[in-house]
Amino acid sequence: MIASILGLLIISKTERFDRWLEKFILSPSLSDQMEHMGVEERREYRFGNLYALCQYAKKTLDTAHTKNKENVILLPPNEYLRSINSGFNFPEPIAFYYHTGGIKSVWTTSPNVEDANWTFLPRGQGSIVLVPISKEELHKLLITYKKYNPI
Amino acid sequence: MNFAGLLFLLITHFITGRGVIELFKVKLPLLVVISLSFILGVGIASFFPFIMGLLHLPISKEVLTIFILSATVLAFIPLLKYFKGSNLKLSFQEVKFPKIYELPFLVVFCALLSLSVWRCFYYAPNPRDMLSGPEPIAEFAVKEKTLINSIYTVDLSTTNNHLKPLYVTSLQIIYKIFVQPFGQLWLSVLVLSFITLIISILKQKLHPVIVGFLMVYFFGMPEVFGYTYLMLFDYSNMIFFFCGFYFLAQYFSDLEKKNYFLLSILFFSIASYVRSETPILIGMTLPLLVFYFFKDKMDMVKIAIKCALYIIFPFLVYYLAIGIFDRYYIPQHYTIAQEVNKNLSDVSTFFKILSDMSTELIFSDNGALYYGYFIQLFLFIFIIDLIFFRKNSSREKIIAIYGICVVYIGLAALSYVFPLVDLMHTIKRGLFKMFPLMLLYFRNSGILLKLTDIINNWEYGIKEEAPRPKVVPVGNKPPVNTNKKK
Image (cartoon, rainbow over all chains, first blue to last red; front, side):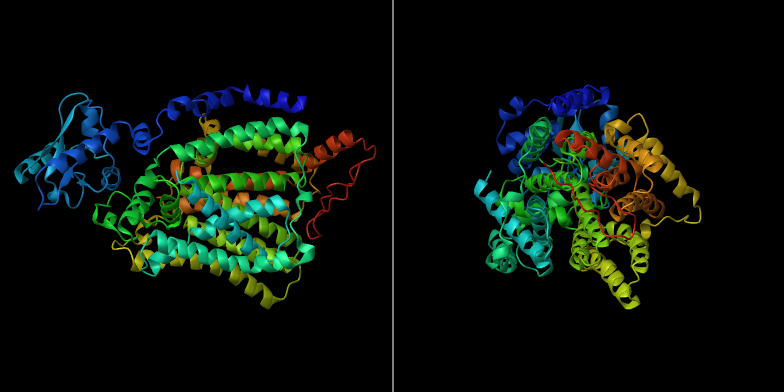
């Protein structure tokens, strides 16, 4: 019994084990998680910014009167968003569809990029808006985004 | 969370798995049987939504319930015979309660596993490989009641994860419908069963304290532990691949145990369903089989039949999941040929990958962050065995070493042929398959067996060296534990 406990203590005091315990096992705190037990809360906890962004997109498109038209959002390239320190990062279209519960999106490199009729426009650090766009505006944006990698 | 749904699934998984094990008439210790039943039950359940998709049946709770219950009832038939047979009653006497010196380890393992189960329940699925394929397909399959759902109308040019076998998708569908919106808890069922299985297997030959320390090192692999609650293919693949190897080793330790061979084929087939590159690794084990068949002077016809069975079933499952489903059911097509390395004549790439695996993954600064000190521990024990215990080479030990080599070299070969198999993702997680095989090696390690003897002698006060567990040279019958405890 003593040998077992001593052995465990010695192993747990190894530098790497110690770091692993601290970084991956003891955090994040359980009590913090216990306070957010609802499904939506847990989604928010896990996805943070992205979750808020997807909820915003859902709300905006739900209230927009574009019933006979399929809404497709052009996602700005992540490299561009990083270059302007927007603080946002978009997932790939399939993941965006999943997070929003069925809103289609395209990357600038997507084969069906011409279908886009909405886009997110960054407005400085930490702020972004979803706006409808015309074909001309889409083409202008694509020229601006051309040199940026979507990832 | 729907606890009744979880309980229903746990019971049906267990009965399905237990019934199938009974069909194979294998005699195993109780804890091994229980854990294997859950593992097999989850594996079998993972085929249900896939089969429903193949048959164009709606993915609904009702149809799924019929599938699960039918399988459970069918699996219960062999169990009826089991319960009727008076000499085959469940014996709880063979379950030994842990000794006091095992308790510190058990407390640590229970704490870690509880945390793993909690995170598996709490966290929404997050890994990129899941969110760009299996998870959205499962989510919309539940909503739209079909596997071929609106996901396939989205731009999928950024991913190929929607083309992977439906193992995770299917289990997610089942657990989303019956348990909770994030699904995922099937992973905890597998993890808990696997840890119980591996500890039980190790304790058959090694002293519990040694097993405890080995398992601390196993748990202490951050990358591996992380995937006990992060849903992905690799942990499941590791479990089914290991079970295949374990039963293969049991079969070659005693060729009379023909059903062990069939059971190993079943586990390898499920492993091939989990990850589509597995049949290639299984194919690489064929020389070992042929070698032992010849060594044991088996009939040529029998050798041919066994080798064919061994290869055909995993490839059949692969063909069903990829060749049939992806080609004839999914609206988007994908040819694996386009991913093949265009410069195959340059073999130096293969050796570079092999070297990168050791320098960048295992022995790099980040190595311990991926795999802790487990590989170093294995190498240390392996070298000691190589120097001092060379004569002790049971078949199980050789099969474990061969399996480790197959995983290591096989992944490098796969990456050489398909550059998509990259070092920092596919190979890093593909190497998981080596670790339970290393534990299987430890079970037969000369130094650890010697250490077990020493501790047992001291613990039970045996003066002379007891003949336990005796490791015999290749080709003989398996080691028999003849030690009589006081």
